[in-house]
Image (cartoon, rainbow, N blue to C red; front, side):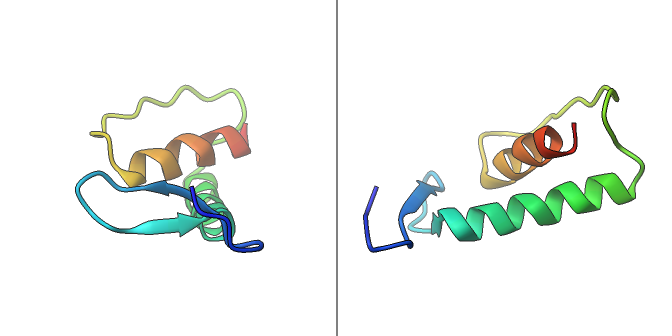
Length: 68
C-alpha cells in the first residue's frame, strides 16, 4: 500500500498493474450499489455472486453490503 496524502492505494488487480485509491474504489462501489438498487435489489434480498477473483467481485460485494 502506498501513502500519498489522501491517495492511498487500496488494492491491485492480480496480474496487472492497475491500482485504485480508496476514493476511486468507493466511487466504483457506489456506482455498482446504485446499479443493483435500480434493478430492485435491496435490503433483505438474497443475492449470489459467481465471479472469479477480480475487481468486479469487490465492487459487487461491497456494493451489495452498502444497499443492505
